[in-house]
Image 1 (tube, rainbow, N blue to C red):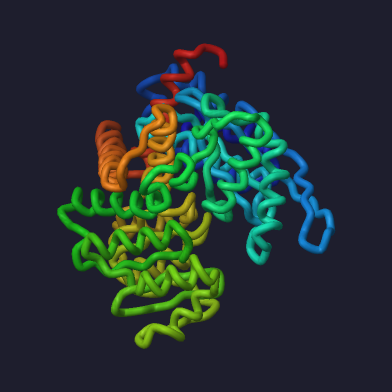
Image 2 (cartoon, rainbow, N blue to C red; image 1 turned 30 degrees about the vertical axis):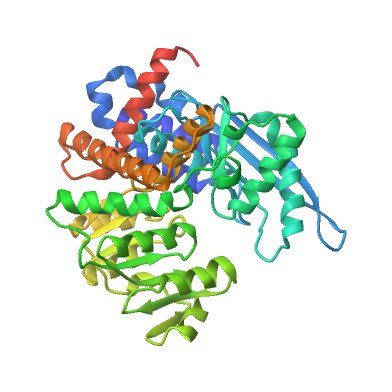
Length: 443
């Protein structure tokens, strides 16, 4: 880490104890930006500020379950940086959510959003509420209570949340309805990921998974290769994973394995998307059931999907799912590229192992920017009261992901680090934010 920022990182750790995910995200960026600081010493003025959120909100969320018992969860919104535009980032409902997770995600979001080229800042939020196993009415009551506090902190020109793990179309609908009830305003642009019937954007649901695959395709093309004929493994089986699988198949690759918290399934003929969607989106079942309906599939319980040999790995589940052992397994299995569909799913040790083996690696802040990119397009459509076709939105997504790839590649080359997508993404994202923050003065 450059000496000019070592003290900043030490201060981040001291001021934010017990938040290892946030420390990891900050370290990864600060370790990369040395070349930019050497060329632009004035950027050092904003390093400390960019590591400190503009605002952190923590609040109680009381709600009533179907048995009439009042339960209490904790809600969060971290508005990290608005140098480029209104705060923008998802809401995560999951038992693992605490302030450190939200800050890590919000910090990553700053640079991810900057890489898209859109006028949006970075933020994140959520709650330690688990929607799994809850009835629709319980989820509705929780969302209404959550928004009863959150509404005062958000708005189309201030902070625009979206969905993340545990927050899909159902939850966004309940949140938007409560916002509209409280404010007496139809601010369609206050949330993204909305249903198409009330201001949502075509291709938003598909965007993160599609975008990661578009980035992978660009990365392989840069190396004189393509997705055609590639054997692919995807972790997860939720929204991001499902649409990553779909786009891989459309571009000529074959996804032979995917996973959930109970293990993974291998289908050498290619994952059957119709069956996977029915299982996960309609029945909300376990992935092990897939093998009961697909003749050639094998379910492997309580094991890691990265032991399956592949050419391309798409981690689309959660943070730090690929550690040193998993990275070594990927290298042994012939993997040539890892493209992060989730946020920070690869540990620093794993990144080093992949790098030493010559495996191309794309960090999530670049590769999974497709979701927030189409959220930005949804904001544009809401502001103009316009709607675009699926084809228009997907084409714009493809162009944005190509631009993100090219910015990362060109920046790495500019600073003498050819092929280093981590450095390219971090330097380019930081540079855009730093220029804006310097222009704004002491804010």
